[in-house]
Amino acid sequence: MNDNDLKKTGNGQEPQKALNFLEAIIEEDIRNAKNEGRVHTRFPPEPNGYLHIGHAKSICLNFGLAEKYNGRCNLRFDDTNPTKEEEEYVQSIMEDVRWLGFDWEDRLFYASDYFGQLYEWALKMIREGKAYVDDQSADLISEQRGVPTRPGTESPFRKRSAEENMDLFLRMKNGEFPDGTRVLRAKIDMASPNMHMRDPVLYRIMHAKHHRTGSKWCIYPMYDYAHGQSDYLEGITHSICTLEFEIHRPLYEWFLDNIIDTDYRPRQYEFARLNLSYTVMSKRKLLELVSGGYVKGWSDPRMPTISGLRRRGYTPESIRMFAERVGVAKRENVIDVGLLEFCVREDLNKKAPRIFAVLDPVKVVITNYPEGKTEDLDLDVNPEDPEAGSRKVPFTREIFIERDDFMENPPAKFFRLGPGREVRLKGAYIIKCEDFIRDEQGNITEIRCTYDPETRSGSGSERKVKGTLHWVSVPHALDAEVRLYDRLFKTEEPDIAEEGKDYKDNLNPDSLTVVNGKIEPGVKGATPYEKFQFQRLGYFCVDPDTTGNKLVFNRTVTLRETWSKISGK
Image 1 (cartoon, rainbow, N blue to C red):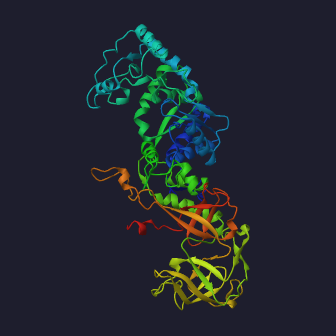
Image 2: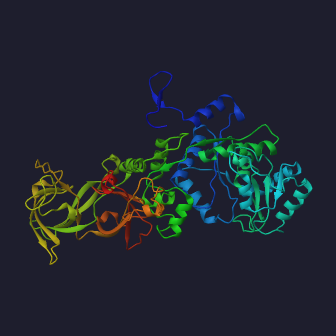
């Protein structure tokens, strides 16, 4: 769905967005009083890494549908693999969901809450001859499954008696066998064209400490076994997954049909996962970027993680706007990362205070301005927000401007400062370049100008010039470390690499540039995650590395799309 997918209301007057396919299913279920008209969804992350922008779409979808249809949404951690799961990830996921603006209220669950019940159901399947213990290695089991076009080979242990299977499974639970020596498998159909139905593994032996249950268990259920039963136990009506789980759905339903004796069933639906240009979404690859030192942790502002986007200066509103604009589809596609950048620009334009910051400063001396004089100029905090008011900005004889706002020999359409040229200093006066000074290396170190005192902004002066520059008063300027973040990858599809190379060879060597800038004094005392528009430069966020004596800013996004020029497209 996108903004063009509109339909008329009953009176033909007011346009409204068309229903996406999930909304259409839910509304049909409500009309038919399916599940008593209830809508109950869940967001079920595995706590084995930090959430990324793709998870944000799923969060917005699951919680958003529940909100739209007066339903409920659970947060459930599918914590079935203790070797990869950590409490750190649990806490980060809860923080991310809250930050996005969603509340699971008292509905926080874990798959580990159900380990006892899942174990009892496994015993039930063993007793009924629907599950058996297999002594073969994982590699051999995988080999025997074969390929979809021809039947697999049955395990030599498939015909074990229920009594023998029960004995072995109890001994597996009691810790009598080493890791990898036995598994419990469902007995379904080794000839099924769906590989997931070829006697899938239900339990494996893992002598590992679980972040919640400790050492109580040494057998752990597989995700496919735990997932549908957890949905059932929580009363989920619409179990929404990404498309790669579509082929798992028959197994999801087989477990429920062979375990549950009630009429109620959760139902699984699949939608296309989010794929973003210039981005990798694989947890494995993101972990490799972190552990290999290619980025500075999971919250590095170049990462597509929610914590990375938050640190970079993205707002929850911008990410929710992005999720809404992307919509819900059944077919995989790649979304241009420019849409995500557009959404944050749209949001920050309405709310970010404007300030002056000079990132590559060169000093300007206004020779006819009185020495020692300071004027406090009134400038808008945000012209898009009439209630934001104004701010005081000091103006003095010496100011900083951007080095590239001056050229010794400017071309005709260079509407900035040059010898004999005039520009307006935003919110202040028109100045004219009279001279400039170089150091021994030939670098310009000072520009000498005069000003027209009759041209102060707001004074009613009718003099016009084409160029307007931002500036910062030299004696009032605050020092700041400014981190200019750009896209982490230089190619649109970083997963596609030349022969003999991998995705890391597509990393953008210029994804981070650090400069020392000068900032207007009004930002003194700014706290981490505060957001500003550096006028003419872009949107920036105060980084948590900021201390009492050191200001650190991250560039969130430029004022307009510049990547096509940077990347040579």
